[in-house]
Image: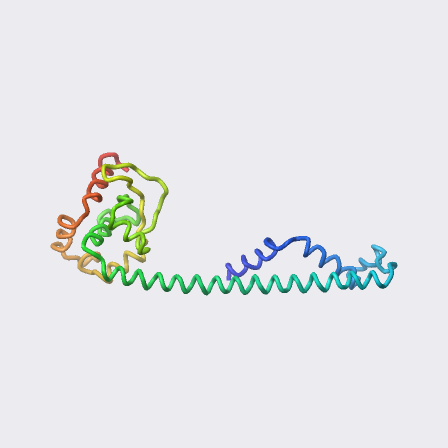
Length: 206
């Protein structure tokens, strides 16, 4: 509802304000609203000129109505497209989550180990790039830090994504985790670039 209200306001922001001024003035004169026609001397002009004013009002009013309808249609079309794209992205994310590699699981495990939605990770790491492209991770800040593994960036794993991971892999990401699985991921599948960034973070305290 809030977005619809903003869309209605945008109608007046994006259309030429002169069109509204012309329509309002022509309407006030044509229908003598609040005696405007009497005050301005409009009633004293020739009838043929009054017809032109009436025509201007009609054309401008129709134009405004058409523009408003177009804006409303565009708004609902954008809402539909956005909703469709979000559903499509959600399906792709679900598919990706169910097909994570061990290296990707190890990368995501870092969020649970550090108990934070945002952590530093190697921005150019293959696994990180895959998770970013899949929409599982997102960039939390434009700040970057240089490490031996290249650029490290602050990335975010939203809480709802953490919950999905816990539901899909309860043995790894939930409170019912199995220690042997965690040890396997941490010691054998954590990418070297992630280890380097963690060492750098611990060393410089960021």
